[in-house]
Length: 510
Image (cartoon, rainbow, N blue to C red; front, side, top):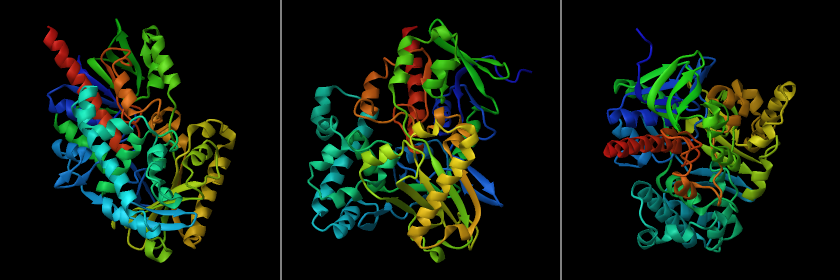
């Protein structure tokens, strides 16, 4: 008996959140789907690991687009609709900002957030609330237009704020509200999660981020991010999806400009009508298409023209005391010596010391995150791939520990506690770690950077032109919606929708 079927409707390369989202959506429509995952477990970066008998979250800080059970947002609703039952815990705050002259904890809810900014910077309530309301209007437009595209004329009538702000950077729109610098600083900490300074970041992207996180709050799974991927995989298999692990896809097979299957590293040729790839286009178009001559020059030009966004460097510690006793008061802390986001972006091109850190204590969002009397504390920065590409193999260990030491010492000073004296377990994750375990191009977890020249609106307009090989779709952080675990789910759904739409169109022509 053959291990694989003679033919599938769709082969999905990669069993992380995006690939599993594609598989679920396709299976719901009755399609025969095969998922091939190179790792021995699903999830990619949405994973966990065990050290000293304690399970530790590998990457997730917070999930966007979940919402309360009776008012789900798009990602939460998708999980519910697919029958993926996850225990979501709402993160207690938006973030604590530790910035020059500011130590402020801000909470979700537009009015709550605006009032707390006003308490720190008096006289700003109305302007901050107006800005957040504008973000929410744009957020609602983006959600509607992603489902119901319309003409530019109709768009202007129904989505005026979206159209009028689409051509401006985040900084330009924020400046129009004439807010004091300290208020602007308090509105900026999330910038790291989109990976572009405010003078290049489209306001549309900023608006979606702020409306989602601030307006509705963020969530984490009770059993860490691996709960998402394991339950998605379990549900997909129950719906008839075949998932095979430790299967590295080496080639995507193309004939007459159309994908028709894959070849694995062990030599299996598997055939399908469509292929959805979680591998970056950079890798697909430079080394995975067979024959290589099937790759048009425009595809290479496209990947060369796109700028990779951020990778990750994290120090994850299990500490020998409770958060309360160690003086850790906030679930999420953004700490920096400036909120000049463009300067910070430039700083992230190097190898440290990094000027901007984000720290998470999972126990303050999940009281069962670690055994009683201990806590989990992570310190993360999201550097650009530029600097880490220059690290030589013989220098890697030294550089890794130098950067980790700087981050631990920085937060020890902030907390007034010598963290080194309380470490039970420690894991250092670098861009190389990400690349090794997820195969992400250059360790880049955040796909292509959103800039005024290249972001979700522009990508939607050029999507058809960038379909260089028929019946080949892309999902993952590098796809249209961009970075983060929530957008990865959206990207997976979008890839599946493209396949279903093409199937329907081709069937109609028969």
